[in-house]
Image (cartoon, rainbow, N blue to C red; front, side, top):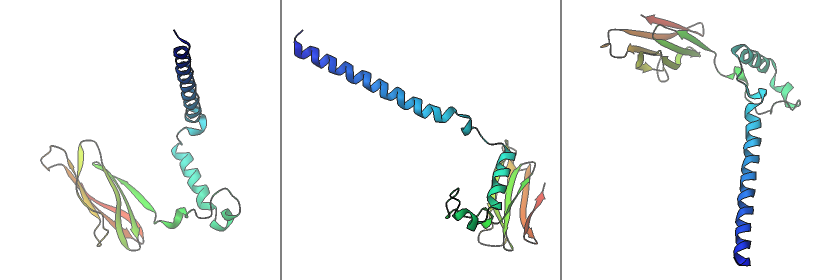
Length: 157
């Protein structure tokens, strides 16, 4: 082998080793962030506690503290939602003033969302879940209504 070929081979080998080391270091740095206990999912109670703490802090108090940016919107700005479980699925509704609104509809396994009127343009906020493959015989119709600004579910099981 001549000297030039030996130099090219050594350069290639050095570049390959360097690339592997950089890749391993990157995976190690990323992996440390993924496996630390700080990234575990929060329980429902922990989420509720965190939301309660954020609501309790007034926007003027958080401006100088540095814990949250001053531009963070208030949690209480959106109308409160209410979750309504039915035998065919779950409906989440809210009242925007006196107008009912369906926020989301999630059918249970074996059911599908057949009709939906989220109530955005008019006063009706309703929908229907139907059993899959049941010929439309097994169905649950629902309507969200507002009673003193609080959403309520009227279901026709």
